[in-house]
Length: 279
Image (tube, rainbow, N blue to C red; front, side, top):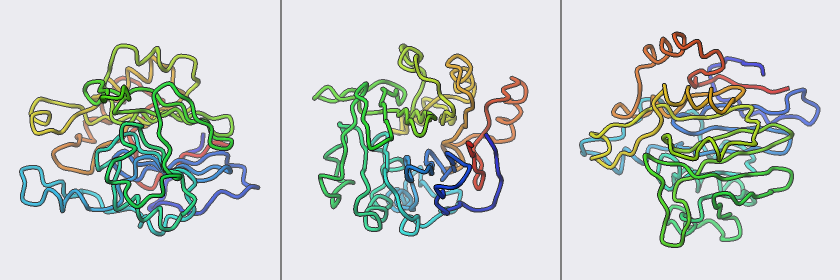
């Protein structure tokens, strides 16, 4: 893996002649842009300020701490857009509509529990793919294997579908694990067993009773994410889901010190403008 630092998101598609097989970039919060020779994938993009509008004047106003890194209408050709669950910072109607308008053939993979969510209104039904835990999907040469995630707790809807999902995405011989919003739960390691994860994308903003009481569900602490990465044997892990909202972030300096103290050489915090390339 090669790490390249820059100031902005690169929207240049991978050439079929490039030595790079896979390129991953952070979009802020839980959002990632993944480029391969098999097409462009976006996971959990929040590329608007819709939550600031929704929560204006409320206790937790959801004002962005970081600028929108790229206009979703200018993001180029997108083959697959994955949403791990229905919360707006993972399934944002404004972002989804902008991507769909530019990409009429884009497939929107969402949990089966969210298939009829109003945020998907306007998306052709044939472009919505319902994902269910433990039911692998093949989209061309890309395999997606959903597993449950515990957004503090595992949740199942009335039809038996897991509300929160993580995705193991296999592309060109490489596997990415995006846990979605997740905290430790019994069975997580067993669900990951059998997969060689080349790069894991894990939230690190933690959780507490104050946020939970306000309906703001939490995730792994940084320590829990590092422990999972070590226990599961991920090749490399990126911590994310911080720096977007002032009530739901981490102290980056303290977090980096903790990573150094634990000697977690294969774990780092996401950084805007940084590219991870696999050749």
